Image (cartoon, rainbow, N blue to C red; front, side):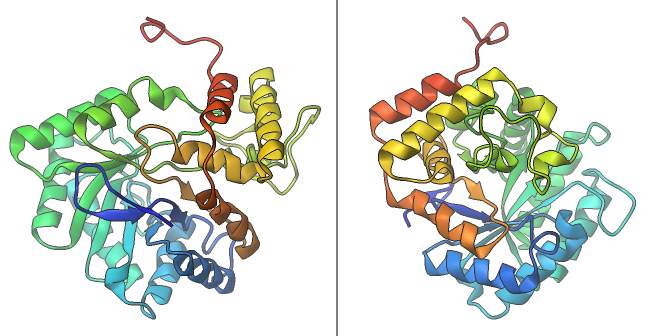
Length: 322
């Protein structure tokens, strides 16, 4: 596995990140350990979780595994925003300081490599949150800071405030970006490229839509899939002609290259401009074995062009169509 610098920092991460969202939820501790070991044996160093995953169970499982490893070999990322131990959510100074100590305790470590704001908080001044993150870096509890699920103007404002106040700059953005979700190309990715932020994308298979399990002609999702539950990955959101066209082309490219559909979907992301590392979140060790194959090949320019063309949104809102 290759390694890339995270944006303009000196921190190097593996070109694939391992998402621990399923740990403690749909993935047992035994399988979680197998997944972690397989990922790291393949050269993976970047592991992403969040305090809210499994109501803290994901961090706890990762922490128990981490105690058996050499801590400095890994880049551990986690996030803050959603309620875990308290009924409060958000990014107030009180909330963040409580949350970081709780995450450190669950992870069994004295520092977090990448601490990310999981969402925008409309109720807390951004200056309060960013100054708190700066204090965490200065105090040694956090090494780098990033954000996730921000809009373009929110991301740019955060970057500018850090610069204006001499606070720790943002190292990365974690957005939803897939063959079915290309709106980050309108503002988010340009901001990251212009400001030197790394991009670590979540849900590269869009909760299974790009896993090979979905195909034209289906009238409902598989019963055990995430798509069968309410959320941003819902059936009603993606069951349309555009999605089936993307999946048709994805299947065709996979057949021509002798690769699996998930491998091609992840590989497309790995080759997109500005992307540092897609975060893969396998539920089982077997699924991880397949996804790791995305690091073993390169899509030819003509195949990238075909996927780019097939997945391009049919309509683009103003002013982006200029």
